[in-house]
Amino acid sequence: MAERRFPRLVRESVLPSSCIRELTMADVAFVVTTIAVFALVALIAKGVAKL
Image (cartoon, rainbow, N blue to C red):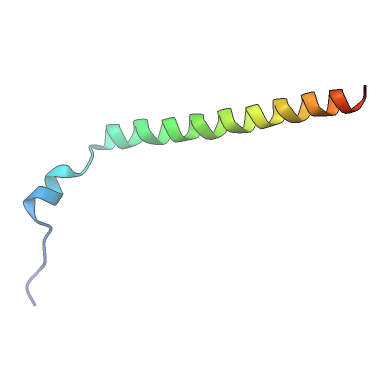
C-alpha cells in the first residue's frame, strides 16, 4: 500500500513550534489567572461571611 501523505495545504498550515509554545504559555497564564481570581473571590467571601 502506498504511503498516504497530507496535502501540501495542510502541511503548510501547521503552526511552527515557537507559535505553539506561545499559545501553550498563554493557556497556562489564563488558567493560573483564573485560579487566582477564584481564590481571591473565595477569600473575600470568607471575610464577608465573618462580618
